[in-house]
Structures are given as C-alpha cells and as structure tokens.
Length: 484
Image (tube, rainbow, N blue to C red; front, side, top):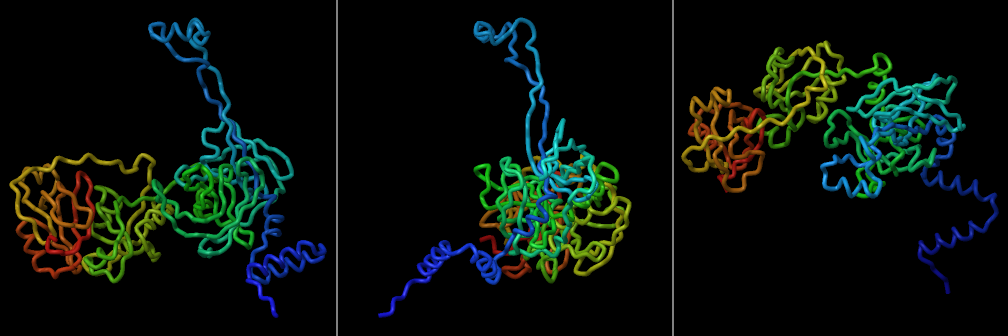
C-alpha cells in the first residue's frame, strides 16, 4: 500500500530532516530559496548598514520643582505641611528630555538626513555610527512641511547610501528599513510597497509611500531601501491604535526629501511656489457635467484677488489639466507640482474651460507659512418664504440686492432647504452661483431660471453647482433625481 501525506505534512517533515542534516546543506538551501524567488537581504545589510546612523537628542525643559500655589490658595497649607511648598517663590530647574531616532549619511563629508520631528527643539544632537564612533551634530536646517532635517558632523570618508529613483518603484516590490526601533540599533525589517502617492490628513505636499514594513518608535528618519540597495524613501510615521506597528507605515519619497535637503544646504530654509487658487477633486460625475472625457485635473473653486492666477486670467470653474506639460492626474498633485517650482518662474497651465482646452501662463509667487487657509465664519442665511423643491430636491429662493451686496456677489440664489435624498455637498444657507451641465456654464440669477434649466435635463444627468458658503466658493456635483 502506498502512503500519501498532505503537502503541509511533507513540507514539515522535509524541514525537520534538513534541520538535522550537515551544515554543508545550508548553501543549497539558500540557492533553493533564491530559485523560489524569495529575497535575500544579507548583502544589502552588509553594504548599506554602515551608512545608517543612530540619533540621540537632548532637550532641556525648564520646569518648576514644586506646585505653583499662592498663600491664598486653600491647598497651600496642606502642601506646606508635607514640605512641598518652600517659603518664597518655587525655584525652577532644567530637566533633560531624551529622544531617539534614525538617519543616514548621503555624502562622505558628513551630511545626514533624518526627520524634522526627531530633532525638533533639540539642544544637543548626537550621532552614533555602526563602528561606535560618536559625533555632535549641527542642525543645518529643518522643514516641518516635509518633515525633513539636514544634519552635519565633522568627519570625512564616511560610508554613504545610494539615492534611488522613487518613480521606478512599483507597488508590490520588496523594500527594507534599517533603523533604531525602541533603541535597538541597526535593526532591519522587510516588507513590500503597499501603495504610492498616499495622501494623509493635514498634509498635501508629500505623496507618501505606504508599506507594510515594521516601523516603530526610533525608526523615524531612517532609510527605506529597494532590493538594489538604493534609498527610495525616509520612514516617517505609522498609523496605529497601540503606539506600535500595526501594518501601516509611511515613508517620504526620496525625491521630495532631496529637494528639501538641497535648499536647506544652500540657504538653510525652503521656499515654495504658489499660484493663488483653491481647488477640489474632479470626480466622475463632475467630469461628465463639464463634458470632460475622464476625471482628472484640479477644479478651481476660487481665485485669490490680486494673486498670480487672477493676474493671469484663471477663473473659478477652470480645470487645471497640466503644468508645463506635466499631467495633473488628481487635485492633490497640483500643490505638489507648484510648490516645487521656484518663485518667480513662469509656468504654462493647460486648463479646461467651457468645453475646450486653453493655455495660460502664470508667474509663480512664494508661499509663506502664514498663508495657510483658515476656516471662515459662515454667514447667517437670510430667511424667506418657503418655496417648492425642484427636481434635485432643493428649495431655492431669490436674493435681495442687499443680500447680494453683503455676500459680495452679482447673482445667485439661496438654498433654503433640502428634501429627499440629495447626494452632494450642498447645505441650507449655500448660495448657487452657476450651473454646469453638458460642458456649458450658466450663471444663476433667479430661482425660477435655475428650476427651469434643471427641468430640461434628463433624469440621471450630472449637474455641477458652483456654490458659495461663507467666504468660500466651491463646486458640488449632483444627479437629477426628480427630488426623490
């Protein structure tokens, strides 16, 4: 009788036999592993490990040695009896806070890259090499927006990494990290690229690489290598509910980092371009309403008065498709492209306007840190007699001349209420400025005019509304559903 074992059992038996076999079998196992397509990171670690450094940061914090209580405080006497409140003013003392991270040498004369948050507010930065040498590092500059810092140590002939091309990186390819998780120096972890160009909350200037490489506190600022031993990213943050690794790690692409590093090295700070527009994503329904072949580009919500785009003739409702011939696939790509342009440079924007492409030349200005958009207060919506909902489920009313003056608009109608299952970013109190459908833009002057326009459209047709909410102007795309 022939004995047949399941594949899993056979594999287990084979592994047990090989574990008892001669050490001479080890090279054969390595060859078998390579033949099976499994990566071998040993050579990469031996060659690139010496260029990865440990970074220890000391920060002096001024703190009181006891509670700050006045003699009139009811708890003063309680603390005084237990020796917690000395006579006179409570003295302050310096407390040293310690932090640790990783970094890597990218030039043999001692320039090192790490994360800005690793060395933020540091009073002293110590860099330790794999050969146990230690150096006091100077922070040449740091940039919070990209979370990149440039350090310099007084040394020469140092091992250095090779900078790779992140554009050639593919989702699914193997990558490894080397760093100092939880203080364990020169630890290597491996995984794959899970996604590219990832947008994260509160940051739209960095198209993060997402990986499943194990990254933990202390890995910050360390390199992410491809299998060729080239740095393609800088490990920066993780998404976690526990504070430790949970399978979602994010790295700053090396091209973004090197652009920042070059500016920090040359002038100690980073300058970025701006063109003075507020934008939003072009969804499939929006593209249909604008008669655009496919969803792409950045839809201009509003144009800054007196800004570069207004001077060049950019208008709300334009869709920016290209910058100097470079395609803008999503709205998040536009600020990344523009901020990388040196202020004062002329760029050619290819825009989609009223169903046709046109080119507009814009002179890029400098983005200041204090120019970040802040939320605007919402105006109180004027109350009027309730009308009937239209085919989109919107209850509209006309604006008085006084209301138009207050809102600083020449035309528009008020959304008083919403009925039915309206899907889109529309709220009571919004003002409809224009309707875009089939590539045609129609300025809205009265509720009757807008309702009549919608009545002519087929059920299911995409309609984009240009809306004003408070001080902000934006677009929202809906479908005709007869108010249901």
